[in-house]
Image (cartoon, rainbow, N blue to C red; front, side, top):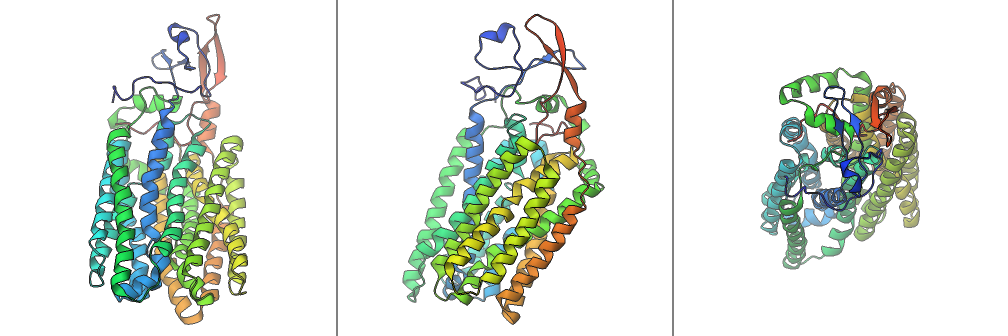
Length: 495
């Protein structure tokens, strides 16, 4: 990695300056006395960190787009492949089901082999999935399109848990929550495009040959984008910067492989009661979002027949509002560190948004649905990075890849349960009853969130660590170490 990590033009970070041989370098260094070696540890922020997080967001985008591309035109897919609604729902739920058994080996691989290997595998699988779908644009080949969707769902396992790890490895202490939000942002943007584009590319026509042509175009666009991003990842994506961005990452690089046990880390997390409560509440919230996204086409078509395109636009509204919520929440956490208060407030507002959406959906005014869906999306999907960051606080110094993996596993389990249950409720009692079902579980999640003990271990560690910085006069002054990363863990082995 040495050649690609050679020093380049960089930005000043939230570091303390030191005068020495590198004083002429435009980079602002942090000279910290290491307790074990008494050697100064230098930290540095590279401009290329933004390129890395942007590239990650790009391949997360194309993977998330594929998750929802069938569900938002479910009535058209049912007609083309001559399958039931439940079969089309499984094209979405396979993303959730695949995640559950594979998350533990994948997070182990992330901890042992690092970011670059994980990124390469994710993109290879994602690209393979898109090209398999290209071959499935015939009414008799539903099983082929399901195979392609499975490959893409397998790729997702290598993607969902990476934002917090990537932020920890590449970003400074005062920007990791924002970086984590940007990583989540790409996934949300992919879902937004998945809501918007398929209804435009695949109109509801009766001629099967014409419909096959439109579906084929949709698949070719996905395959072309996935291939281009795979090439970029191979050429550009790096494991880590040459110089760590924070003191916590500097410590992580000094850890020996035998000092980290993945099994011990998992057991420690399972014994952490505040974290396990967060796992449940996070799963309830995100599981509701998955169910709404999967069944949105059916909800809208029931009350507004023929509005497939507007169903996609409503889904787009939900996710675009959620992207704004994610970024705002990430910036807010970096500034205030009020994790429990913010998480609980956003959860309560998610419930409020869901209630508003539920009881206005059948009023007959699409503009009202757009407004309530936007409010719901702002808080419900804005909650995603909050859960990741709060988990890191509660589980420090465990690996953030493992903690976020458990959160996502919970979300997938509840997503499958809620999607199947709400779909059946809608079949028998209608959309209103199905949405009330989700409101009940959001209320339960709000109560569970209120019971989480706000044990901010990372913040306590930051306050307790005393460091020494070299002054221009050569004297030593005692300061607090603000180098521990928001998403970081000193127990991670960097490959």
